[in-house]
Image (cartoon, rainbow, N blue to C red):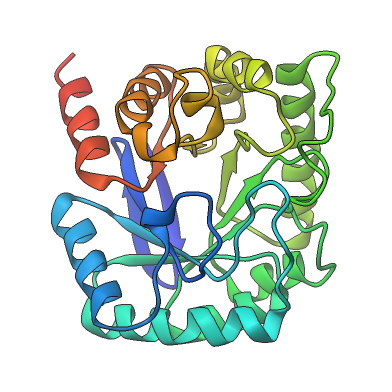
Length: 273
């Protein structure tokens, strides 16, 4: 069991939970995840919550391979109205902000977010880790080789599992020294990894349990699925459910997904084994 202190509210993870993805941009790799603030966004959020999402993860820019960077001001203009609206309408849901900017993290938490989900491990804004510590919110630490613009240009590892594990051991110590108390780890499937690297990480996911931290699994509709199945992101839902189920058997605590209902069903079925 894990507990996360989310701005004074305790999120208890005594069984796996689901994080629903809400992208407030027009460039994310899966078109079905793209939204704009407004009634449709709130309808989608309501459906995710009714389907069983514990966390809603809101991001203002795409981090798909080769994506274009968006500055903090643009990102804020996208995510703040969405966070404010969701927090006002659904105060019971835990909201995470998907950002690598300290300014966005601070204003998002003030607007109602209570978790910071950072793909960069603090490498893109040297104020982010101190900001998260000051805010006192949980932090999702993800592994990425390179940046979204470069990460799929011939990623290389001698031993991908060991190298990602070593990265977490080192960075968790950095986060602790910075004053961040609640940490979630994310192996970063698709972020600077080949399809083979991704499957190796999934096969060895149980090794990360040695860190005694919640493991976030972000496989939803990604290239490792649709390229293997010779389809596209639209056709990768069944594959997502299969790999999420495998991740659950290996100790995943949080499933970050576009399709909440199917992920919740996988958790419910697995809980009976």
